[in-house]
Image (cartoon, rainbow, N blue to C red; front, side, top):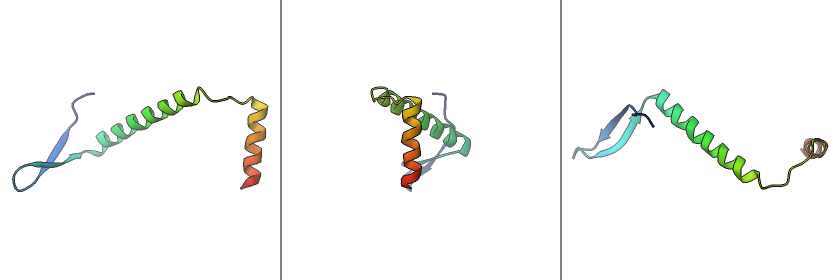
Length: 67
């Protein structure tokens, strides 16, 4: 990953206790984490049984009626 611009928050002993990121950096980190999580879910679901288009439509129509 590239160098992240950050500011440190320190206590009275000059010990780092927190980090502050600009919003653009935070949003990029958030996007990367979400994409990674989505990729992991996709990998896990590849082993699950797949529905045909007709089966999927029937399944989702049943969900609409259940609500």
